[in-house]
Image 1 (cartoon, rainbow, N blue to C red):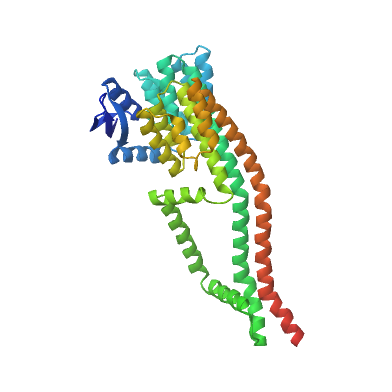
Image 2 (cartoon, rainbow, N blue to C red):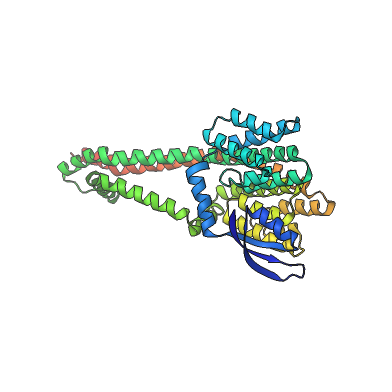
Length: 405
């Protein structure tokens, strides 16, 4: 059980605030809804958050997303074939190749044996099963369509995994090239340039500014190699720590949305994730406000989270979802708002959102392929400039001096 601080509205629109213990946000929302209240926000107290983090760190972190996809897909197939939930979980426990995941499945089976529902058992492991997973399973249990809900969960996880894998794959190649160039440059400064510096000192010649800068950098790296690497490690650690803070995440979100090659890709990735998650949740029977609250936790970018949070409040007041997307065309392309509006008008919102998600996923797929062809010449130019600067700074003076001898 976790303790939540919540804000809710009654049927007359009056806002109330309070504290209550519940298994998760969804259980809290159901309890308050049964009392005629609509949840506006629900935040776990710090002690509950710390317990969840401790559980993630000590026990059940590190379960691969592939294991979760296989779990949802196979569990759907076995339940759909007529196996009992207890037997299906026993089979999944034996099949899993992850020791940690086997422990999780074992404890889920124990909770179900004690009378808990599958969604409640999954919600006990927030570090393993994301909110969208739990919400769809809960909706499947309520509607009697658990196998279909699990199948949708598996597809949702697979699509999100594919999107992230493609974007990450497109970024890895240039990152490796840049790191290798920097390392080669540092090694040249430490081992090669000092030999050339000795030649210049013997000739006692006047050197250009660029050559003096290279020699000064080389002297520092050669004389303070350990200090340099320790400083570099401290700098990288500080940057990583900063980007893990709330302000750092906002900074990284802003950078992603303003970098020339990355910004269009980021908008398509977030649009696809938003539309597919909403489609999956709505088609599973989850209410719009609750679906938006879950989607907010699925998207990674801070600015998209703010838009979706505002959408939940506006939809609760009676505004359409499409109007929110249209008000934020800087983040969501025009097509997102238009397709959402058509879905609202025709009563096929989940279908239209799914079509939009498929469209943007294809756009991301093509963009990641094009990104490598665009980045390669940029990297070649960077390498050429670095080599040219070094040649002009170090080799050029050698030729000039040899001609004067």
